[in-house]
Structure formats: structure tokens, C-alpha cells
Image (tube, rainbow, N blue to C red; front, side, top):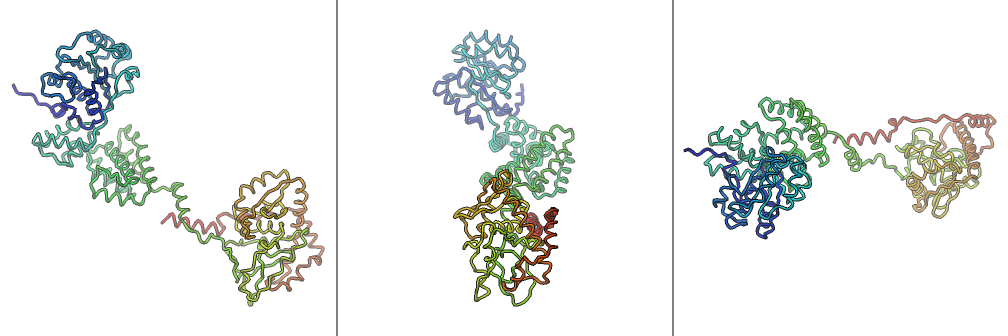
Length: 640
């Protein structure tokens, strides 16, 4: 009688603990338990298909019931071990939980455990797919499982441990069997091919191992099918043809097109694989796996992808050099989020194409982190305020105004004033603060220091340092500079209810009416900006701004507002009556500084100005030269 053919999965089933591949954490624990005589009454083996749950249960049963057992190094050729391997041993009862899941079947087990084993030392009950038992059957097994007779051992196996009652799991020692690595499966397939006299290429063995998804039984079954198809000579092309698999070169080619953002090439490859009958869901899964490996390789260069050849890895590494790990993480997340839609689609080609296009778009998108990084790396010299006075720039002095610079340089020629980028294009009089009437010492600050060399005038001390500026003058200069620099888009309207009180050794005190809490909060939020401006004007870094609210300040602020309006009208009228800018010496300015000759018409116009609120001119945000230059620099950085 001819011997029936045995498939590779049965023919090469593990016989000993050493034959259990990829589960060293389980075999080591079981061997030590046997050697130390610490054998539990129940074991639960958990893991995906093809990882060796049944094989481990049979090997454990052999070790317990071998002739000189329990012994971890038993002889697999012993008669009782052969019976256990073939499933015909009377002392090892194998039960299918899917077909024997009722309470009556458990009652039979509960009644039979009282009988002693026939040949071995233990009566072993192995229930496969134990999660299929009903709740009543589980409850009927609890007492027997917790306190079985000394000669009884239980072994359970399941692929879905979450369906097993916690009361059952708590009475067992649980072992989780892991998916077997591709390398171990590949080596085992090559070993089987050698024993069977087959020709199996290394690339074909690796492709089979990847397709098995960590299950040794699946890989051995695929090899069986390939032997029948190829008649003993198995190559990579045959594996791809019969199972619709994709080589690492094909996956690398597609991922390379994605990284290079060639949408047309990506769609062409997808169409080619679809027409060739490839499994698009498997293709998409392999793309996600490769992106995950590349992300890990980007973070840790020592963790190189195992599924790629050196040449393929080199080309992918060069393509992903332009992307940060954040971009690769975003692309991987985009792919993973589309996997569920692909599984549910009856025609997976369209969802696959959409997923890959979204992935390319995610690589080309600009994130907030990219903007922050670009701003931190960019240099904006055009936006840096030049604090050094220019010798060629004349200082325009208006009537009843304190000059902001300590000296006025004589100009041999009449030149047009050169305005810096930071200087506003309108309202030049804002750079010169008007003198309140209650400050008699203000005109003294106009006197220029005498210098023999006109070019050394920029080296003169700042008037705020030697005490020549009053508190009100310093406050006005601070407001003018903030408005001229457009710092946080502050204008004079933001400070119309403020008044300068005094300058102490460490603080510059500004007053507000008692009820102006919002203005106080706004100034305090920008305290660092004010302090930098104070330090710039005075040269004293220890001088800090301090806000004080009081009921006595409201009347003082109202009086100063009226005085400022009158002075502004007077200054505008005097400026219009002059045909040339006053940029020469102080002696030529003295006649224009006398405000007693103003006509009654000017006074009337001042009164009308007080009664009619001035319309505030608002410049367009994008018309500002500073903003325009900043946007140009930023766009250049992003495009590069």
C-alpha cells in the first residue's frame, strides 16, 4: 500500500523544543519549568495562525509523558511520543473547541478526569480554539480547572484571547506566541528545499516569507503549491506570478516615485500592476510597511530596512534626504488612514490612487513647524533698525519742538532729506515731540553741542542720558519711535490718555486715569518693547517703564490733550508759511520759534480743530514697505 503524501506543514512539524522556531521566550520558560518541577495545572497559548500553538502543546505533552518524564530533552522517536505526534495517544485528548463547545461536552471532561492515565504520567486535555466555548461551558469548567486531580493537565490554544473569560485566563499560565520573523521563515524554507532536492532562490524564499505574514504554516503551504507549479525550480518570477506578489524592487520603485513627487509615474505604475492582476491591497500594505521602515531609518540610521537591497536603499535614502522626519511621519499617517477605505472598497484601484495622491500632497504641504523653522533660519537685514545717525541726513526742526538728536550738522549743500526704510512716508512732524507748556526747560534741549569736526556729531551723548530730557519729552520720543517703527502697529491714539510723571533712578513712571485699566493692561503686555525703546533712546538699560493709575491724572491728561492739539495746529501753520526746510543753524530758527505772532485765524482754526475730531488715516497693511520686503524674503526662503 502506497504511503499517502504529507504536506510540508505536517511533514516538518516541530518534534522537540529545539524545533520550535522564533518562540524562544516560550520554549525557555517551559524547559525551565520542567527541569525545576514547577509544572502548572493549565497553560494558555495565544497567537496568530501558523505560529506554533498546537506544535508547542504537543511538544509539551511529549515532555510530560515521555518514558522518563517529565523531561525537556526527551527522545522524539519513543513510541508514546510518536503516538502524541500523530494524535492517537489515549493519554493526550485533543478537542476542537469550535465543535465541542457545549456544556454537555465539558461535563464529559469533568467526569473523565477522575480516571488515571493509561501509559503516561499525566492525563492531558488539549482544547484548540478555546474561545469558541459557550459561557455556560466555561463556567462548568472553572472548578475542575482550578483544582484538577494531580494527574490532569489542561492546555488551551486560541487566536482571540479577548473572547476567553477572565476567570479562565486567571487560572492559566498564558504564553503569547509572536509572528515569526522573515529571516527565520526564509532559512527554514531553504532548509526544506534542500532536504526535498528542490531549487529555491533566496529572493523567492524571502518573497514567500513576507507573504506569509509571520506564519510558518502559511509559508510551507505556499512552498508546496510552488513545487507543483514550477516542477522543482522556483524563482522570484514564479512566486510573483502565482501569488500576485510584488518584489522589493517594485515596491521600492513605487515608493521612490512618491518621494520624488512624480504623480504621473505613480498612477502609471498602479495601472500597470492592476492590469497585471496584482493584489492591490497587498501592494498598499507593502507600501505602508516600507514607509514605516524608512521613517524608522530616518530617525535611527542604524535600523536599516531588511526587505531592501543595498542599491534600492541607496536610491530611496537620496530621495528622502530632502524631507524631515515630520514629513515622513505625516506621509505614513496619511497612508495608514486610507487603509480602511481600501479594504472596504469593491474596486480598490481608485481608493489606492487617491491615497497615493494625498500622500504626495502631504509631502509637498507646508506645516506650521516649517514656517517657524524658515523664520528662525532666515536673516532679514532690511528689517533691522539702523540706530546709527546718518551724517547725510538733515534733522528737520519744527517750531516749538525739541530735537531728537543732540546736534544739527551744517550742510554745505542743500540736499533732499534721505529717509530710511524705518521712517514713515507721511506725518514727518511725529518724529519731533511738541513741548507742553508746563515744561519751561524744554527749549534748552534744542541747543546743539559745539564740535570742531562736523562728522563727529554722531558721537555726541544722548540727551536722555545726561538728564536734558524731561519725563514728558522722553515719553513723547518713545511714542514717536514706536509709531515710526510700526512696532505692533502702535499709534498715538493708543497713548492719548497717558501722561509722563517722573524719571527715577530705575523707573520711568507713566500716569493713567483710575478707570483706564485696559490701557494699563495693554502697556504691561508690551513692557519688553517699551523697555527696549527706553534703553535705545536713553542708553540706560536699567531704566524700566512703570504705569501708575490715579484719579488726579484725568484732569492733567485732558489739559495736555488740548495743549497738544493747539501746538499741532500752530506747527502745521508755521510749516506751511516757510518755503524751505529749516536745516541750517539754531540762530536761523529763533524767529520761527516765537509763537506770540500767530494770527487770530490760526487760533480760530485751532479751536475748530478741537471741536472736530481729526480723521485718522489708516494705511493698508500690504502697502507698507517693511511688510512687503518681509514677505518677499519669506517667499524666497520657502521656494528655495
